[in-house]
Length: 133
Image (tube, rainbow, N blue to C red):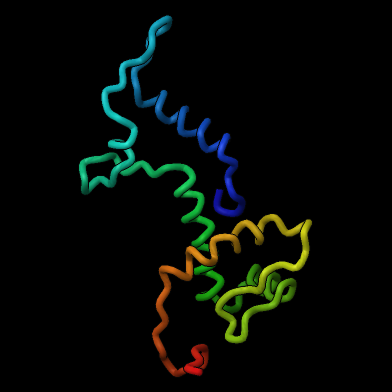
Protein backbone atom coordinates (compact mmCIF):
# COMPACT_ATOMS: atom_id res chain seq x y z
CA UNK A 1 0.00 0.00 0.00
CA UNK A 2 2.97 2.33 0.34
CA UNK A 3 4.28 1.95 -3.20
CA UNK A 4 1.27 2.13 -5.50
CA UNK A 5 -1.89 4.23 -5.60
CA UNK A 6 -4.67 2.06 -4.30
CA UNK A 7 -7.61 1.85 -6.71
CA UNK A 8 -10.73 3.56 -5.38
CA UNK A 9 -12.79 0.37 -5.74
CA UNK A 10 -10.29 -1.58 -3.62
CA UNK A 11 -10.21 1.15 -0.96
CA UNK A 12 -14.00 1.18 -0.79
CA UNK A 13 -14.12 -2.61 -0.49
CA UNK A 14 -11.50 -2.65 2.29
CA UNK A 15 -13.32 0.04 4.23
CA UNK A 16 -16.57 -1.90 3.83
CA UNK A 17 -14.90 -4.97 5.33
CA UNK A 18 -13.64 -2.85 8.23
CA UNK A 19 -17.10 -1.32 8.81
CA UNK A 20 -18.80 -4.71 8.66
CA UNK A 21 -16.36 -6.04 11.24
CA UNK A 22 -17.14 -3.23 13.68
CA UNK A 23 -20.90 -3.10 13.16
CA UNK A 24 -23.19 -5.85 14.35
CA UNK A 25 -24.88 -7.95 11.72
CA UNK A 26 -27.23 -10.88 12.03
CA UNK A 27 -28.17 -13.35 9.38
CA UNK A 28 -31.18 -12.09 7.47
CA UNK A 29 -31.12 -8.66 9.11
CA UNK A 30 -29.21 -5.50 8.41
CA UNK A 31 -26.69 -4.66 11.07
CA UNK A 32 -27.20 -1.91 13.60
CA UNK A 33 -24.63 0.86 13.32
CA UNK A 34 -23.66 1.71 16.88
CA UNK A 35 -21.31 4.49 15.82
CA UNK A 36 -21.04 6.53 12.61
CA UNK A 37 -18.00 5.58 10.50
CA UNK A 38 -16.84 9.22 10.46
CA UNK A 39 -16.78 9.15 14.28
CA UNK A 40 -14.66 6.00 14.25
CA UNK A 41 -12.19 7.63 11.85
CA UNK A 42 -11.69 10.68 14.08
CA UNK A 43 -8.40 10.89 16.03
CA UNK A 44 -8.41 9.30 19.48
CA UNK A 45 -7.87 12.73 21.07
CA UNK A 46 -11.22 13.78 19.58
CA UNK A 47 -13.09 10.73 20.83
CA UNK A 48 -12.70 8.47 17.78
CA UNK A 49 -10.82 5.20 17.36
CA UNK A 50 -8.11 6.75 15.21
CA UNK A 51 -8.77 4.48 12.23
CA UNK A 52 -7.55 6.26 9.15
CA UNK A 53 -9.31 6.18 5.80
CA UNK A 54 -7.54 3.82 3.39
CA UNK A 55 -6.91 6.43 0.67
CA UNK A 56 -5.49 8.95 3.13
CA UNK A 57 -3.20 6.31 4.59
CA UNK A 58 -2.10 5.29 1.09
CA UNK A 59 -1.20 8.90 0.26
CA UNK A 60 0.68 9.32 3.54
CA UNK A 61 2.70 6.14 3.02
CA UNK A 62 3.65 7.15 -0.53
CA UNK A 63 4.63 10.62 0.69
CA UNK A 64 6.89 9.07 3.31
CA UNK A 65 9.04 7.67 0.48
CA UNK A 66 9.62 11.23 -0.75
CA UNK A 67 10.75 12.21 2.75
CA UNK A 68 13.09 9.25 2.82
CA UNK A 69 14.43 10.20 -0.62
CA UNK A 70 15.26 13.71 0.62
CA UNK A 71 16.77 12.62 3.95
CA UNK A 72 18.53 9.29 3.34
CA UNK A 73 21.74 9.29 1.38
CA UNK A 74 23.68 6.10 0.70
CA UNK A 75 20.89 3.57 0.41
CA UNK A 76 20.59 1.24 -2.55
CA UNK A 77 17.00 2.06 -3.50
CA UNK A 78 17.79 5.79 -3.71
CA UNK A 79 20.85 5.19 -5.84
CA UNK A 80 18.70 3.17 -8.26
CA UNK A 81 16.11 5.97 -8.52
CA UNK A 82 18.82 8.62 -8.97
CA UNK A 83 20.60 6.62 -11.67
CA UNK A 84 17.34 5.99 -13.54
CA UNK A 85 15.65 9.43 -13.27
CA UNK A 86 18.27 11.88 -11.96
CA UNK A 87 17.61 14.56 -9.35
CA UNK A 88 16.94 18.26 -9.18
CA UNK A 89 19.98 20.54 -8.84
CA UNK A 90 20.39 20.04 -5.12
CA UNK A 91 19.26 16.43 -4.80
CA UNK A 92 16.07 17.00 -2.80
CA UNK A 93 13.83 15.01 -5.16
CA UNK A 94 14.03 13.06 -8.35
CA UNK A 95 13.04 14.32 -11.73
CA UNK A 96 9.80 13.20 -13.31
CA UNK A 97 10.01 10.10 -15.41
CA UNK A 98 10.03 10.84 -19.15
CA UNK A 99 8.75 7.32 -19.85
CA UNK A 100 5.10 6.35 -20.15
CA UNK A 101 5.48 2.68 -19.23
CA UNK A 102 7.44 0.57 -16.79
CA UNK A 103 7.75 3.16 -14.04
CA UNK A 104 4.48 2.68 -12.16
CA UNK A 105 5.98 2.36 -8.69
CA UNK A 106 8.09 5.53 -8.59
CA UNK A 107 5.62 7.44 -10.76
CA UNK A 108 2.91 6.66 -8.20
CA UNK A 109 5.13 7.86 -5.35
CA UNK A 110 6.28 10.93 -7.29
CA UNK A 111 2.64 11.92 -7.91
CA UNK A 112 2.42 13.10 -4.28
CA UNK A 113 5.38 15.50 -4.66
CA UNK A 114 3.29 18.71 -4.74
CA UNK A 115 1.38 17.55 -1.66
CA UNK A 116 4.71 16.79 0.05
CA UNK A 117 6.22 20.16 -0.89
CA UNK A 118 3.27 21.99 0.67
CA UNK A 119 4.28 20.65 4.11
CA UNK A 120 8.07 20.97 3.85
CA UNK A 121 10.17 23.84 5.06
CA UNK A 122 13.90 24.19 4.69
CA UNK A 123 16.46 25.05 7.32
CA UNK A 124 19.76 26.36 6.13
CA UNK A 125 22.54 24.39 7.77
CA UNK A 126 25.87 24.74 6.02
CA UNK A 127 24.13 25.93 2.82
CA UNK A 128 25.23 22.97 0.69
CA UNK A 129 21.70 21.98 -0.37
CA UNK A 130 19.89 25.36 -0.35
CA UNK A 131 20.22 28.17 -2.90
CA UNK A 132 19.22 31.75 -2.17
CA UNK A 133 19.09 33.03 -5.75
